[in-house]
Structure formats: C-alpha cells, structure tokens
Image (cartoon, rainbow, N blue to C red):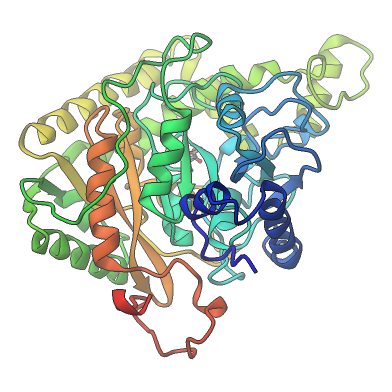
Length: 486
Ligand code: GLN
C-alpha cells in the first residue's frame, strides 16, 4: 500500500528506481487518493486519463498550458479551450518523464488569495475544509498536502505559490524572476508572473526547480542559472547571516500565533549557527500593496484584452463585432478580473498614466533598492509568509481590500523580482504557519540550504492532524512532533 499522504517525490523516485513500483501503480495510487478525498477538497478541475510520462506523477495549476488538455485559468471565458502546444514548463516535466495527473484549481486568471474567485467553485483547506487553502494556487497546494499529488507547479505574481503553501502547511518556491520560462503560461502581469514548485519537502522543491528552470528561447526574459541547483543536505547554518525586516514581522494585522511560530523558527536558526540581526524595509510594507495594485491590474488589463470571443473559448452572439466582444467579455469574466481590467485601464489612461502607473514604477524601483541594501548586510531575510492562518471560506470574499491584504508580506519581494521560499514552521490555532525566506537574485541554493536546515530542526508534520494515524486528537497541540518519532 502506498501512503500518498506521506510519500515525497524523492521517495517515489526511489521506489521507481528500485523497481518496487511501476509508474502505472504510482499513478493509480494518486488517482485513488483523488477519488477518495477530492470530492470534499476540489483541488482538481480535471484529471487526465492518458499520460506520456511514466515517472513521478505531478499536478499543474490550470494557468499552465498543456497540449490536448483543457486549460481554463479558472475562468469561464476559457472553458473548453484546449491548447495545441505545451508550455515550456509542461514540456520540461514531460522530458523528465513526469506524468500529468491533472490540472488544479485557481482563482480566475490567478487573481485572488483564496481560490474563491475560481469560476468553478472554491477549493478547501485539507487541515480544515471550512477554510480556504489560500490562492491563487490553492488547488496545487491543497493537493500536495492531501496526498493527491507528490508535487505540483503553481504560478506566483504577488504570492500565489508562497501564501497557499503557508496556509496548507507545505513548501513553496517563487523563483527569481527570469529563471523559469513563462512561455505558455496564461499571462496575468508579465513583469511579475513566475512559475514555481510546491512540495512536502525543500529537497523536492529544489529537485522540481532544477527540472523547470533555465533559459528558454521562447521567453526572452529568461536567463541561464549562474550555478547548478544543489539539493540541500545538512543542518548547519554556520556563517549564514539572516536579516529580520522589522516592518514585515511587526506589521498591523499579523496574528500573534503567526508571530510566535516565526520567532521560534528564527531562534532555531540561531541555534543552528546563523547570525541573526534586524533590518528595515520601510517602503515595502507602506507602499508595496498600492504599488502592486497599480502595476498588476495595468498589465492585466492589457494581457486580458486578447479574450475577445474570437480566438479562445466560448463566443456570445452579437449583431456586430463590437457587440460580440462586449457580450463575450461581460458573460465570460467574473467580478475580480472585471474590477482589475477597469482599475488597470484607468491607471494607464492618458492624463492619469504618470500619476498612477508611472509613479508606481518609481516606487517599485525604490523597493528594489531597499532590498538590495538589505542584502549588502544579510544573506537571507526571514519573516512570516502570510499575516494570518487559513481564514474561513466566505470571510473575505466580499471585501477585496481584506483579500488583497493577505499578500502584504509576499508582495514586496515579488515587486523586487527576488526568490522566496515558504517553509512550514508550526501551528497556530491548529492551522499551519509559514516562514518566508527571501533571497537575493539567483539565491535559490541558499534558500534551499536554510529552508532544509530549518525543516529538519522544526520537524513539522505535513499530514493534517485529522488524517494522522495513531495520533490521538489533541495530543499534539503544537503540531511539532519530536524528530525521532517521525
Ligand atoms: N493575491 C494576489 C492577487 O490577487 C496575488 C496573486 C498571484 O500571485 N497570482 O493579485
């Protein structure tokens, strides 16, 4: 019996290498888990019957184009759209013999922090199905936690990999902008969008990153990695300088339980030999959200102009071209993309461009500069990933500003194009808390080293308490099980 709740991708690969299971058996185990648990969680928009690979299974967020497999980005306007080509990341997964299990749920066009904006209904958090799994990549993150896929790909514009990983208690990486190809990814905000891995361990995340990263001639913003990906080993953090940005750990709205879990993780890092010191990113917290909510909608309004009912998806009837386009877009887009198209078009319009979009670009440069200064003194920055643990479904759905605030702590480093890794660091009120580690450009190997060392020291159990066998309910209030008992 394969226990998909605990099996890592690395372990799955070892079973395959030793001939102890076949690719088909692995696939069957995950499809069984999906039929058992996905009725409740709704991580998958669709599973696929046929697959080209025969290796470790994988799930892909539905903004990732997959040849002959419907790709909707969680939107009605793309319902029925079947790409005739693979995105570069999907193609690289196939080259690595990974087998596609299916496409995971997302907020419409990756706009949101809870998956409640999906046109196909929300996903649920495996730790507590009355709560959100985060977003926009909630389907991928919840699927990994629930053992419905050993690993998955998400996309992150302002936090959509890191925040759902934090809320679901697993590991997520938003890579350095330009290290992973965006070719074939449904575009949201092109100067921010990045694809990245979600998995149960830092080593799995590093492994999957090594499969997808690197220069792609179809995306001119991509670069060759300056050094090969190193799978992290060992626990020493000797010589690593960790900066704790006060504004990102003290900001209003960060729950006390989140602060405590993150503070404990930082203490553990010190115990492993790291030098910890305070630093300051004053503009990031004050201006990060407003800056992002000008730049991202501006780019979205331009990217989403292509959905005209002529090239993709369903087409509404109309007497004229104008009417056809208007009706298609009116029926096809949900409220959040409409809100962003309007905000973005306004920010870009003649007369307002300098005051809004131009100003936001200048602020973005200042945010880049203040991160650069912090990395003159520190190797890695550490703070919470999300200000809160998973919130109840419905709580923020009617309040866009409360939803946007979920990304307060992830957005600044996204604007700066920097890599960020979220690692589970404990529980608050029985729900996972994520520690966010931010690195300099191309600093992924260092993030993997620090993340792995802390993961070993923390000993977080990624299996939701309600599914742990042999653990009495309530016997493990911290969520931290001693390492030797795991
Ligand atoms: N929640 C943020 C937004 O709605 C970020 C989404 C993302 O990273 N795709 O824009």
